[in-house]
Amino acid sequence: MPDGEPPRLPPLWLSVSTLAAARAARRPPDPFTRVDTSRAVHDAILAHHPALPFTLIGEAAAFVLGME
Image 1 (cartoon, rainbow, N blue to C red):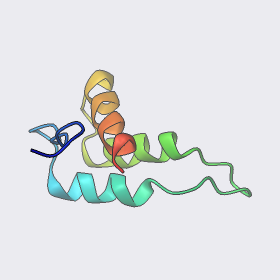
Image 2 (cartoon, rainbow, N blue to C red):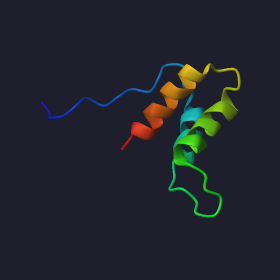
Image 3 (spheres, one colour):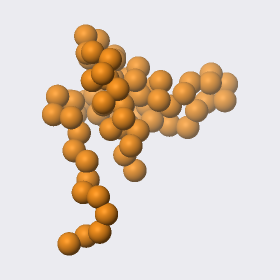
């Protein structure tokens, strides 16, 4: 049995395209635009699910930012 925590599964409602867009938004901050990584991930998720409550956006962003 491997050591450490088991891998986290994405939220069930999170689509593959949203997950891909959010993972692509997870990048180092741009020194010129000063876009924060967390904010970029939130914006990517919100673009795919505009009516999503902020708590679910936060849950999905925490999953994406917690990867790796």
